[in-house]
Image (cartoon, rainbow, N blue to C red):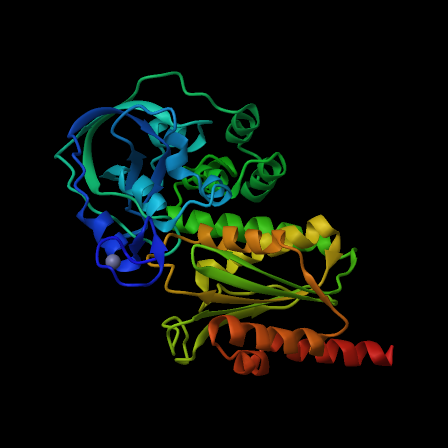
Length: 402
Ligand SMILES: [Zn+2]
């Protein structure tokens, strides 16, 4: 199949090659209005100039029944939405914002963050928005930023009872509040909104949290709690999973042992990963059973977003183990869409049937050949440099003396 516009052969979505599809999105003229009635699916709390940040709401310019689909990573993944489907959704969202600070929690932002479904509002902006996309490293992209003049909620906002309970409980710690709701089935996208609008935690500590920080904080906190619950389980076998989504592929290797986790991220087409502190082909971070003392320096938000589905999987299998994860980013992933892509790609990989191996050497041998054949990438260096694999050896040697 050839691209409908330029006739070259390449990666296709909507019958277009990556660069034509990109052009099509960026050339799209949206007729944004200055004043409108619309559905508002999400708050957006900026991080520049913290604590004097921009506080915004991501607004559609009309009332829509499907408004929640504009802010729904797990739904996008389930329906296998493509990069450009997601950009279509996100570019329609105007960030109606104003300068404020993290200590000022206003009702409108708070209600948008905790509501069960997108909130119907009347919004007047200071000027007519022009088409544009804003990209962030953790959050998904959204349309233009515009100063808001007036915003008013025009309906009775529905809030789930469990959410109301947590919102009203000013003695409940934020981690406990979030895990209470997580266990009740509220997903991490919802929880990060709740955290960002300052609706959880001890009363005097409540404040707005920049959206990108709230995403990673939820991934970090939910996975930490699950990792703590793994301790008493039996050890997992040598299981290998592979899969991906939106051009992000994951090879997830489970080894019997105590909890440890290591992530290697590389771009199939690039010799150097720009996030690598030593200019290597890959960016990497690691933790053992004692956890991390500091933020993942190279793989950043992607580290915590990867650790969440991995710990979810172990918990659901009632197993503990060491997990070595390789990410391969291909040219199909034309624009960064946020760390939810990491989370959902790994969830997809872990839904596939695993391959089982009799020992570590056999699994790694398979991994090397498979990756070389699939992506033309050598992972020998990553395997050699892996701290997790080194520590597995010592773990084993120690056990041999027992
Ligand atoms: Zn083309």
